[in-house]
Length: 185
Image 1 (cartoon, helix red, strand yellow):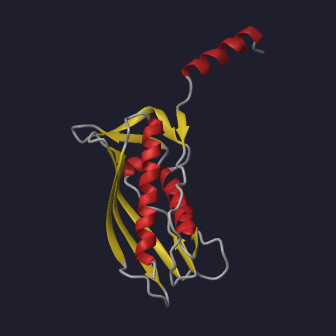
Image 2 (cartoon, helix red, strand yellow; image 1 turned 135 degrees about the vertical axis):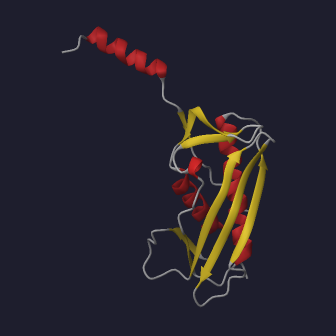
Image 3 (spheres, rainbow, N blue to C red; image 1 turned 45 degrees about the vertical axis):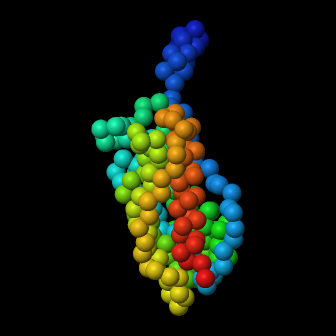
């Protein structure tokens, strides 16, 4: 049995080591609500590059190398967090009901949005980059072009984790606004 003084010392030592701080994506206010011919839209889980598939927070140095930050992490796995944020932003932006996969509602959705991300990180150029392509598949409704490239760049105030989290939240909101405009009537 461990003595109380030794237990307290062990807890104090572990607390001193600490765990990395965790950051969440924040949903941004929506400027306007757009009409779309789809009643329901499903957002498939967002495909991410390898460095962004877990809860590690990364940034790109001046030489182009992706560095994993040791004292910061995301509060959720990136594909899930970005999928949920996109779904919420699109649901607030469109007349359609938007939800992430797996489809939680009865019946099948009228349309699906599939986002494939090539780059999602803060860079040495002072910008947060969110690049890739998205696909829109629709059944029985017309929603514009079936695929579009995107390259969102948002200024990031610095390399502190909270600054990166704020910039990523803004970038995801800009991507949602772009998708919403592309599927609006």
